[in-house]
Length: 372
Image 1: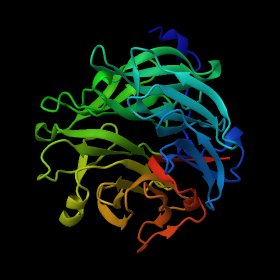
Image 2: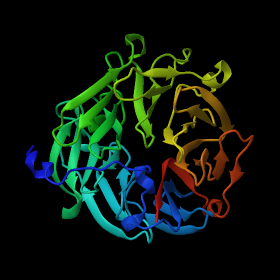
Image 3: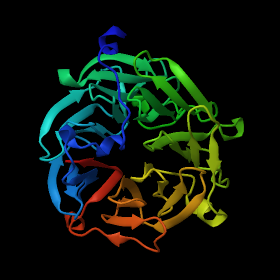
Image 4: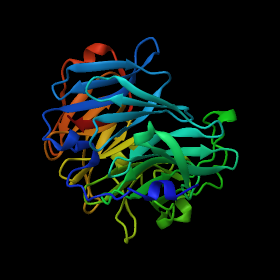
């Protein structure tokens, strides 16, 4: 890797809002666009964009099932990343749904479902599988050169899944799930006895490992998969347990650089209902709350970002996608059964967001929001 290519110009600035809510071109946001991959009743895949009223703004066919959606900090672009093991990135104008670029990965790599931009928007980073060598890597692409790949960083682990850029615009936090896979065997898990997940903080200029946290040995089968981050760099990491179904270990963890991880548990009945699987994590606009989905259990739980305390739940059948809402404590929640709900922490229930349900959509795992 020629690190000099992307050392120049990669100077991030602290962001006062989460990356996805920076106003396009520095202007005050006039509206929000929510985006999610979905499938229709016939098994075709789409990237759909709708506004805060629930009105559909575009419906873009995808070449294969989509997963994570990364939001550019100021260009009004998003990148739809293919579901693992995937082969495409689709760069889309978030206002119109127009495809700007389609990017294919290297033949000896597959995408692992997520990407993140540098703070200045010049570089795009993707979690990938170097399956020939059984290691995780992070692809580096030059946004201004049509997302051309210019380098690669180590993920410092196996099976990196979600990654986030912290507020300095330079430090990546990466969820290394610890699970070895190979495209010849699809999504089969090849090392459950020896897996070792980690939370890695990586300098996106040099690839250096800045900080690493691992779980206790008795939890080594608790795969760290997805992340939520606040504007002051509190990290919520969520897990998918690969051990016995009779066990119900913690599935939610909190961390902030320089400190130790804090594992959090819900009341016993809710912890059991989470069914050892969390699918998505998201911070609210204020940075006070995290929402965590458990689609197998049909619920979304809420957690205090400062102390990790459980703060309640709401029922969402097959609910997985989460995006921050317009107010403090508010989230949008999407379901594989076609609903999109608006929920505020502390409220007894959720209210449907109208009109989107008319698509007959089966919403996929993740949802994103961008200010236009």
